[in-house]
Image 1 (cartoon, rainbow, N blue to C red):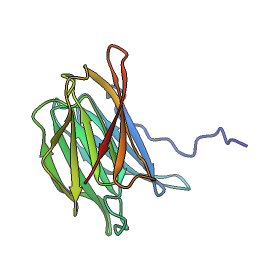
Image 2 (tube, rainbow, N blue to C red; image 1 turned 180 degrees about the horizontal axis):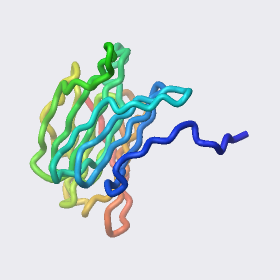
Image 3 (cartoon, rainbow, N blue to C red; image 1 turned 45 degrees about the horizontal axis):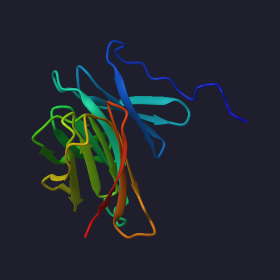
Image 4 (tube, helix red, strand yellow; image 1 turned 90 degrees about the vertical axis):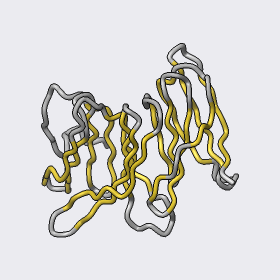
Length: 189
C-alpha cells in the first residue's frame, strides 16, 4: 500500500522556485533556483528537519544538483551542483557535531548551463547554444571541461546513463527546444 500522509514538511521562501530535489541516505537535499543558490536540510525519520547549509548566489540560478560517488572506494557520496552562469561545484558532506558541506572543487565553463546530469565520475552540461561539455572527476577534483558535441540546437534537458556491459561507456540523451531528441555515445578511455 502507498502511504499518502507526508513523512515530513519543509517550508522555505515561497517566492523562490525549486528546481531539483535529491534524496539519499535518509536526508532530503533541495536545490533552489532563480534568486539563487541551494539549501540543504537534514531530515530523519521521525520528523527532525534542520537547515544545515544555505548558499546564496546573488542573481545566479541553480540548474540542478546530483549525488554521486566518483569512485567505488568512496564511502561518502558527494554533491555536484551546476549553476546557470557556468559554474560547477563539488561538495563533501561533513558529519561532525554539526552537519555541513565542504567545497572540495569548482570550475567554470565558458558559457551558460541550461541542463546538467552527473553519474559517478562524469558530468555532462548542455547550453542554449547547442554545446555539450563533459567534465571528469578524479580524486574529488573537477578537471577542465571538454567539448563533447556542438550544434545540436538549444538544449533544454539531458540525461546521462552508464552502459554496464560496456566499460566506461555512457549514453547521453538530449532534448532541444525545437523538440529534437538525440542520443549520443560517450566512451572514456
